[in-house]
Image (tube, rainbow, N blue to C red; front, top):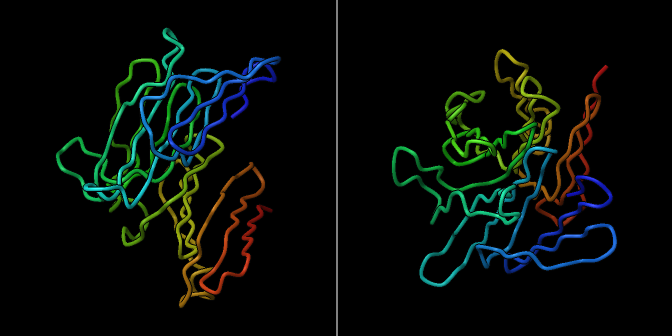
Length: 212
């Protein structure tokens, strides 16, 4: 993630985090040792998602991290073992993050949570049952504003929040209903959404949506 040409963050396997200050790279302290899958940020907030399956004794682990501006280090805000929630404030498995302003929107098994990088408080914005039909598990979140948020899942179903309600688009699923789509990257602009990955038959897949 690039906040400016002199403030760039890189993340990858084993929880490794690098920072580039415009002239040199340096290793940052990391509170985790599993693969970092997603990173996003703004001037006021930088957040990361770490997620890894097949770990000894515990299986699936996912973590939500945010950059503490006072210490300059990433903090482990939330850790989830397994898929299902284990309490009223539990996220369940964490899938993706998107940052707007000081807030990180966290897509999880239980729904979408909103985290303030300033106060370090979080709240459940939409339970999974409130997002469209409630029957889909979404795996990526991106947006243009809090009133223009998109989700996508491994069936090619897209959900959009327009500031009033969530609406699902199943046109890709209706065509490829018998296939899983391994979405590897997802991004949006005010006029376009793009998802890339591969289908069940290991063929490359690009999904593009445009606004008139």
